[in-house]
Image (tube, rainbow, N blue to C red; front, side, top):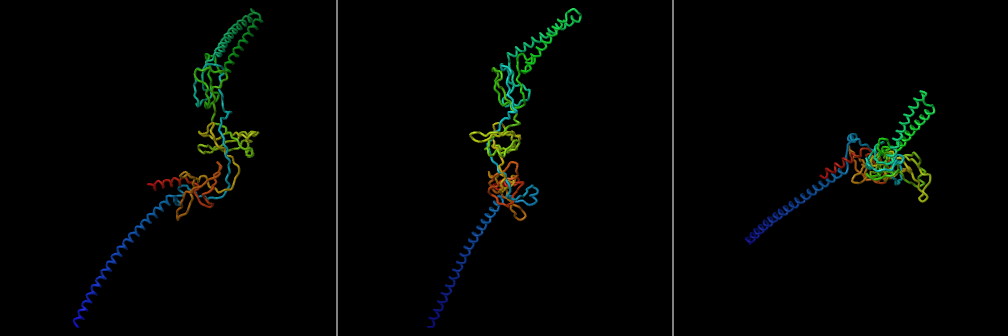
Length: 409
């Protein structure tokens, strides 16, 4: 009996020891698994934090690329001045199609005084010429006859002079009668008159006695050859218009407006017109207003004298006349603040960030503006009270483009 109890105790001790070892091994395995899982989670978490940091850095870089930050000292150095979006008077304009024409008061038509044959042409279409410059040479049969008549009259004058001198000497010696002396004197005077008349006819036609039947067409004014209607070897007739010379430094601006608009127009009034090609604005002064409207359209024609000088201002150029109608109160900014970025009109809005001011381009829709006014209407895109770069916006545009270029690289 005693041996049986001792045997059971020994078996029970062995089982407990085996169970304990199994439990320890199981706990060790579980801890190892937990450590591995925990390491993976930390790695994933650190990777996520790293990605978030990169995304945040990229976001901050993009935000910085969208604007330009400057200190107060840099604003002064760059000449950038802040302005405030406000409500104020903006000129409302009406646009009408118009055309630049030649000023016929400064135009010359060149025609020959004789019918003749074209021997030489000295100028080309579009060429600039000076007053008195030869344009063409004509061989004129009628001129040959007139020059021959002049020579005959000059010969008759010489003979009449000799006869007069002889009769005066004989009369002074008492050999000849006074009546013969008076007759010779009258003949001499008539011969002088005939020579003067022949010379005057040639001078009036612009010919000289030594030209041998050749007639030189000369420019009556300085300008540009805008029309040339002759070629070498052809025959031209009296009063044919062979050349037209225009002085392009003074053009006319002609347009029509509704009768109601004429109430605000008057002679000597200054107006503006805009080129359709370059969008540049030029100046003109109203010269004449038609007294009667067109019976069908009820419109009136206006002619103005162009005051501006520019290479693009040429006859037959189509432009738009800008007529001021009224001044309306509207949201406005300075014209100098508007820049074109990526094909859009933008204004650089200023925002305070600590010690620096950040300028961000804000797209805007623009409205009315007069050419001589510093203001332009803002239809949308800005709010009253916003600060913006009124002066120096071009420098901000340049800095923005430099930043975008470096960011792309």
